[in-house]
Image 1 (cartoon, rainbow, N blue to C red):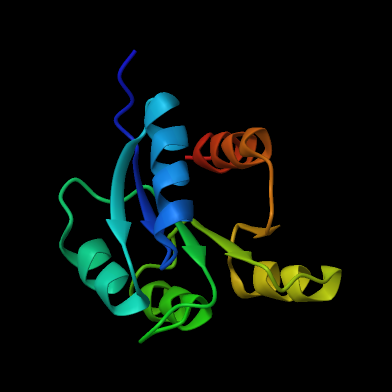
Image 2: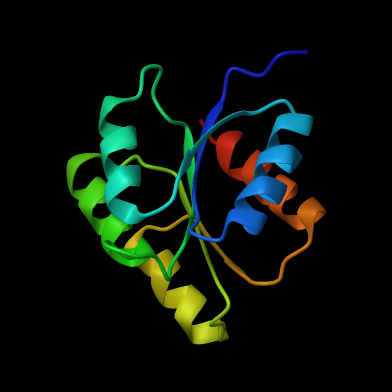
Length: 125
């Protein structure tokens, strides 16, 4: 079954990007990749069909993940955004969710947890 959902991966670590791409494609998602926040913003604005979900590391060059979220959210408050970071404490993730981010996944996370999080967010369409 082909999935029509598009996911934008924003990650500057090529090994993580490769693993995420394989995981998402094997779960029938279409994938677009950006290496930094500036590139991700341009892709989000110009991509046809529309990006359904963004998975972004927070520690990115040029434009960080939180700044990327706020820049996109200012133009599209329906954006579905999963933030991820090696920096993890419960309060940090809760604060991001209060700002409108749909989920925060501290690294390292399990593939099954990521896929379930994606499904839960996209089912709310």
